[in-house]
Image 1 (cartoon, rainbow, N blue to C red):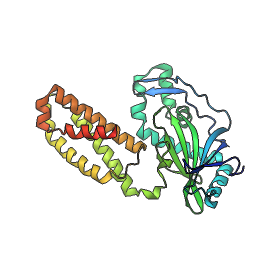
Image 2: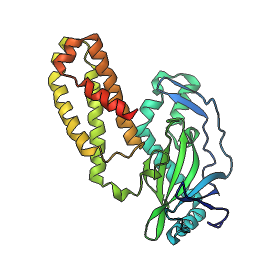
Image 3: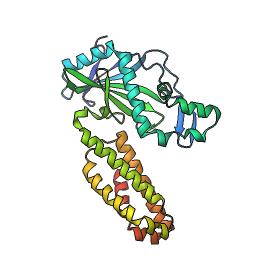
Image 4: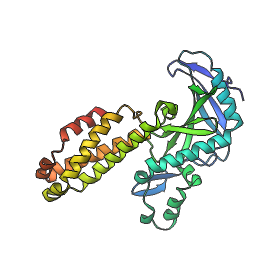
Length: 297
């Protein structure tokens, strides 16, 4: 397979575009719609491929020059190792999606009965996970390592129909991820392990903040939780200032962080409406959160 077969340069994409047929994704297909409250057959069901899948191909080139030798090397390596690379990307995606999406996008096993319960269990396995995702685009990045470019695989998924996700690979190893169209988050060297730990700490802090304010139902509970809420609120602000530049737009981490903050805003509004005395006691900064929400609209 030649990298130069039927590719055309599109300046608006700053990339060479074409198509490529790959094996390794035969069992992928969107068979299930899901939410924290239900699990059902997908409305626009996409059956497993049962053979090689035809994907959109993008080869980055800001200046319109032909693909670099490192990009050619990545393409040749992909064609020679397509099955093992696809498996590595899917296994990595399952691991990340379990952490970022499963608790919010799938019902708990204990709430289901019969076939739905067995299906939910299967979705924890790689074969089951493939029934929630479908690859659609491959991007060969301009960045490279050891003379071989990085490759990002974009997937649509019923876990997040709006954004999807992308997995970044180098040779046979999956190394990073982000929202679809975000180049798999870019080469991992751009975010250090210390910064990744800081992002996780920030998300965990926001989740704790949400949990605390969700427990406020009256003035008595506000008084009881005031000290804990004040402490986590201060930590939240510090962490946000430290991590705001690290969140990649539409990345799964960024989406999860934003969802939690929006949920917390909903709790703020509930408290202000149902028990303004409690809100005043906690000194909830509702106006600041509304301004943040409006800036994201």
